[in-house]
Amino acid sequence: MKKTRFRSFLLALIPCTMLLSPAFSQDGELVAAATDFSEEEIQPNYQYEYIPDFTYDEIDRRIKAMKTDMPFELNDRIFSFIQYFTVRNRDYTKMVLARKDHFWPMFDETLRKHEMPEEIKFLSIIESGLDPQIRSRVGAMGLWQFMPATGRMYGMNVNPDVDDRMDPELSTESAAKYLKSLYRMFDDWELALAAYNCGPGNVRKAIRRSGGKKTFWGVYNYLPRETRGYVPQFQAMLYILNHLDEHNFHPEEPTYAVAYEKIRFDRAMSLEKLAELTNLCVADLEKLNPSIKRRKVPETNRSMAIRIPRSKAPFVQDNLAWISDSLGNAPLTLLASDKLIVQPVESLAQEIQREGITYRVRSGDVLGRIASRHGVSVSQIKSWNGLSSNLIRVGQRLTIYSANTQAIAQVSTNSSGQKTYTVQPGDSLWIISKRHTGLSVEQIKRLNNLNNNNIKPGQKLIIG
Image 1 (cartoon, rainbow, N blue to C red):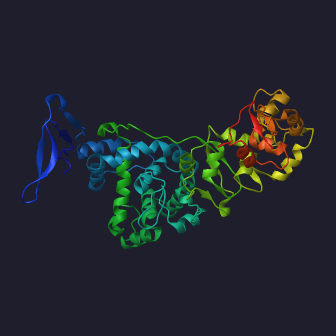
Image 2: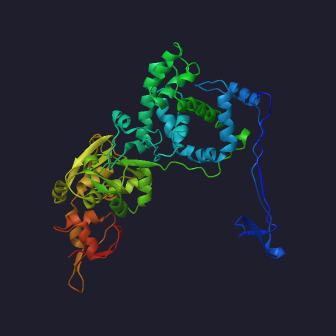
């Protein structure tokens, strides 16, 4: 077999010299019936994909030249999976290539942190095909196919509303910890991978039945059937993705991860409501937060961080107070410098009554947090203090003026006798609502037939 060249040339030609429509013979068999078209309407259509030939010896030389932290030797079992993924099921390999750049950077970072071989990331291809929401027939979920009990053992929420096994970051962190513990147990990465698939108990049993051998191929015949194919598939993918050109694989439409920041609202909430308040697409929020089911964060998971596209994060942080207020009730929480800052809405209203204060910057402060606490905007604080950027330092003193004092001159009465407010630069619906007692964001929107929270300077809003 090793000397026989494997023929892997696939040529599909679909001539269109005639277009065929289905017809049936008298005995019911399907036959082709030609449909007449003019010569001008007939265009040849050739679909062709070249799959290079390769031999066992060629693959063997390439594998021996690979520089990896998880070296392996070619055998017939691995070679058969290389044939499968490069010839018979190329579509699966193409799907993986389109998805890999979405997850590879995060996988690499996690594995480096745990001082593990970066090649471990190829295991997720065998587990899930890089689909974070895939579910197996036995109930395993996510990129790394955790069962519920194992997921909970590693601190992941698994309940009807939130399933962290579908969270790429949390599941990858848990998979790294689990695989590292299996490696410590068997002192061999191939046996660790086998134990990840069938459990450490089955691997120990295979070691005993083999007479004490402690390599994957030494205990191969005593492992469960699925596991015997599991590690060779991993090694086949490790080879293929290091030799894409040799097998004519060229990713055409790769996907990349969306940059994001995490914000905690510390409350039960609806992703649909958050999308409405921030002009985000709810589908984008779902994609960034795959562990959230039914688009709702339940009370039991109120402290979880929500991923927001980085392009929109500054707006959310600058307007966190009114967004949180509109989302629901009670306190709001912002994730800033790895610290949680809790500020009740009632105390925000009290601070707004002040005519002006001098605020001393504390460790962990950011302008967005300070602005939210005092019911003003970041641009206003920068203007009052002559700041050209958002950078502030611990101990710096900032002057913050009363929101009420500035609002008085902007209120007037229109011809219908309604009280109106002229929107100022830096205003938001939440800021305006707190300047006027008894007025909520939803009331402003209802009085002015607003479908979202977008307002602009100079706009007149009915406030009573």
